[in-house]
Amino acid sequence: MEYAAERLDDVPEDVRAAMREALAGGLEQAKKRIPPGDGLMNILFGKDMGGWSLQVLLFHDERMWPGPHVIVNAFEEAGGDLTGRLAAKVDYTADDRRAIDEKCLEQLKAERRRLDEDIKKLEEKLGIGRTDG
Image (tube, rainbow, N blue to C red; front, top):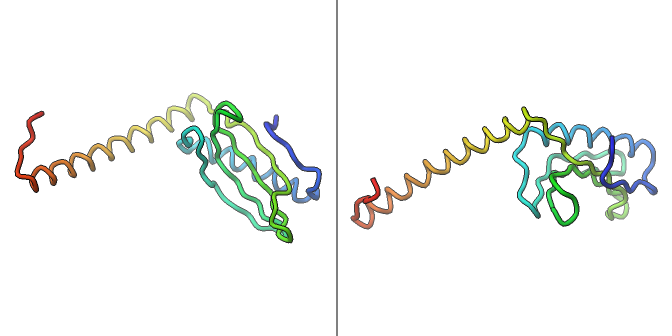
């Protein structure tokens, strides 16, 4: 696997292995989720392991990397500072993109239904009727 970022100098080998495993799991999860907008991130999951914490993020910031990436941050609990990082680009297949697009379409339809209900309630409250059909 090609990493977009790798900072592991101060990370023990067992934690490195856990980071690689978490990255692989995060990439699989990311392929099933609607990517965050540019400049945003979603937390996928976290993992605690004997004095270390791993944080797995779905991240999208065009200023750093083109397209969504999964980042695994490792924190040594003693200091709480970021100690290690692995990142890799999410490579979507055509099927992944289609499934995500279908989810996005369903979310938009649900939002439209909710907005239509809110418009109707507000029109009734104001005593006006809809004129756009």
